[in-house]
Image 1 (tube, rainbow, N blue to C red):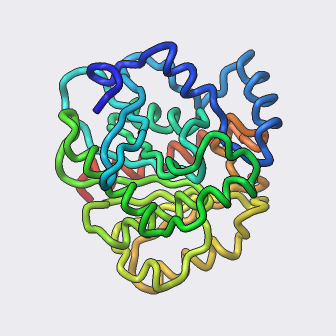
Image 2 (image 1 turned 120 degrees about the vertical axis):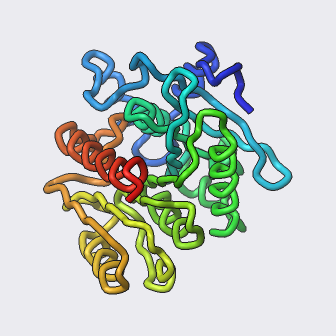
Length: 281
């Protein structure tokens, strides 16, 4: 359920929710970058766009309640749904912003907190890894499935197919989830973690991959291999490589943000979703 009626933002809680940044080695640099960005808002930031509603939601995943961030166009109309799968905590602002950008484009976007078992006290990569010990891919996929069910039941969601976007390990899990369900009609992984052929053997939905040629975590060869795997099995796939872009180039909260490449990638993403979900492709 929504924290506030109709998912309208709660200012104090929303500020606190969005202020938290993802843990890891880039935190301090990201904070410095975010401060400078406040002087001139990044061109891809749309959290304050008129005509949309967004805020925190909670829903059940198995016996437990988990958080998510949901954005939708204002009004009573119905719109196609898109899941947003993060590779880290969903509190880093570019994840809620991705949901908001989907709402601007006429979708209902939801980012389920698939890292809800990781306490806020886990800050370093070692602490985060330890906090996630014992958590399997099936556990992550259960949370994604719960997010999909929450989207399906939302009063402003239009039936007829769902899209899914993922970042890093979230891009990998977006493909894993799409491999296991026919509900997903379009998949957009950004710099996804490496996939094995058997993990996407049943993936039929069209895929659009985005990655940078200077990504220090995901080699270009892995992205090229993924494109080859999908093409050879007949899965429609588009692969876009962005020259000189590093990991997380869409995330304006990070020092590797590249505005021009981010705007182009997002334009391609929305056109792809429109073609395969709104267009019924």
